[in-house]
Image (cartoon, rainbow, N blue to C red; front, side):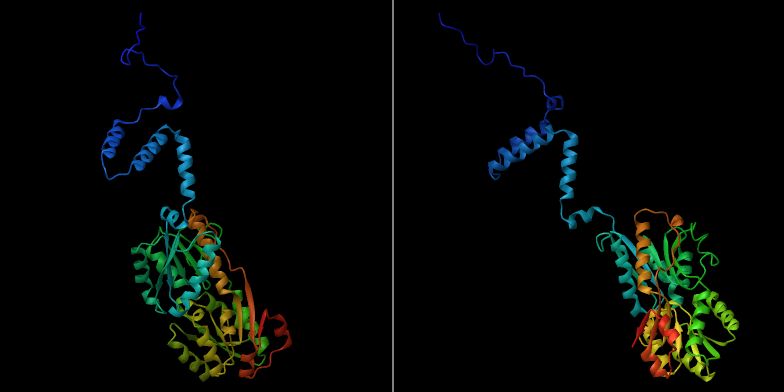
Length: 386
């Protein structure tokens, strides 16, 4: 008698033990229909079909956490240019009232500070210039234009720019570099340790600097009795009043001359000479800081020895300069700015002071002016230009 072999239809289906992946939903019917459609397409190579659906089934059976870890690792391995598309790019408004020609050097210094803090130019931030080229009256409209772009924060240079930015917004962070005014007395901040508003940055409100400048002038030119003072009204009256008080304490007479634009510089020198000034103190402002070369040349041409805050003045042909290294301060400003871009609260980021001060003496200018520099001044100079 022949053995009866059961047919495939009557044979019981063998049930294999359940595995972890089988507890999930089966591959959707849509995938099955897609397999039929693709396999019937003569234009799709067979190996593409096999590869596509093998990957789909593998991903379906993969543990969710394993898949997330794998995807994260793949993204980390992408080129920087691809990853940058997933990173916020901040726009930084640069509100600068000084001469346009001086802006690029300051922007480069800020970028250096941002990059030193780990941020990448173009990928993570861009600088949007808002330049008025010495015209303070344009600061308000320029600040409004920056806000309309819109920018994520504003870097304001000098008291007038800080005021214009503050008047334009009470919420957006403002990073200031102001070497002329008292930030608390001006109402920009509540205190140096906790600014309390939307402004922080670098401030230099040392009225004693005026006395230091006058002492250096007096020791370099002991016969000087009348000191001309160049003052930009846009910088406020704090340092002007301090300079006048310091001159009285040293028994020096003063004459004040306003310089609100670069056009006024020549006339101010002529006015100082007409009053027979013996020396010149140039009080700081963005206009003065951006006009160091012109001021140095005019000082030599009018034979009026001068001192100012900005060390570039002495390096570019002026006689004396004592103050912070300006580009170092702008780099420092970039570091402060990076804190805000990384999430710090502007109201809680302490105000900083310039960190590096220099006394620069130019012997070539002394020779051109017919001045013999005392040994005590030579010994005190941090940098002597022969």
